[in-house]
Image (cartoon, rainbow, N blue to C red; front, side, top):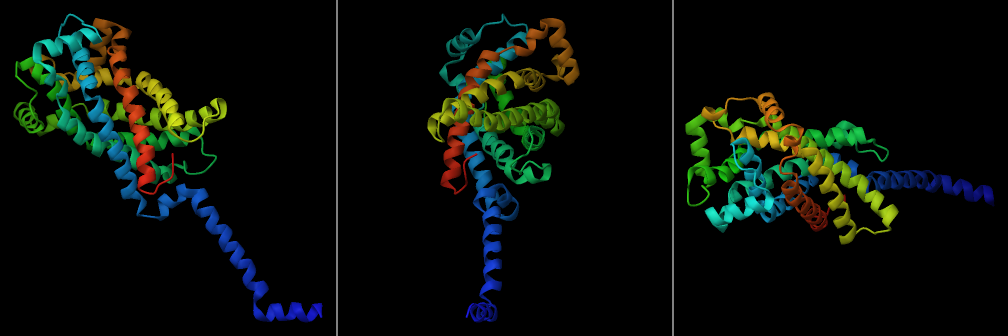
Length: 331
């Protein structure tokens, strides 16, 4: 009887079909939700969602922290132009007193536009390019993750450099030309073209791309590792407080690693041809060392953290929620 049952099972294909179904199920499970990073390579519909979530989060955070960014830029440029070296609070008070509260909105339009495009590229492309660097495996090392994030950060900054240049010029022009309000992005764009030509829009691409590469690497890699540490040591579960603590730690690391490059980038962007605008990146680095010492590269660190700390927190808090809304998993 047992032989008859086995023979009927083989004739009906039950034994033959059962194993492939199990194999297919396990294969689907390994390439499905548990291996969601693989889906980024196989499912093209994820790319627009990734770009949308990254762009919205960075654009929202940029709009919220733009006043601090204006103060930071003025603080970094003040010393280079022979200013009195006002501190963070002093610079903010001087801006409001001499130029009015609207001075803190300088370059807002260009900043948000750049934030949406730049943020969408540097955060949104991180997932899709991870397989190219071997960073999509569960046991991927920090070097693989760092390489993927450096690539997306540098690419994003290179493509959006004109927007960043226009934003910084708009924040600086108001205080140096006596204008009643910050010029718009189109006005700044026209002025840059009139004074420096189209090549002027790509001024500072090298320090900008370097800063973006370091920022993206420090943010994404630190956030990933810090979240694991916070969950393990602090016992926090996936949610608001876990994201908040993790992003605060990430902001501290990101500010410290990017501030030196940020100082050089700001000096390059703000420079004029007749006042040293033709000086390259190495020239600005040498000038900072000669005139201000090593501490000159940390100029505006407190302003940078007051901006980048909240911006990082807002970015990742919004990013995590945006990913859920569009149907993506948490970081």
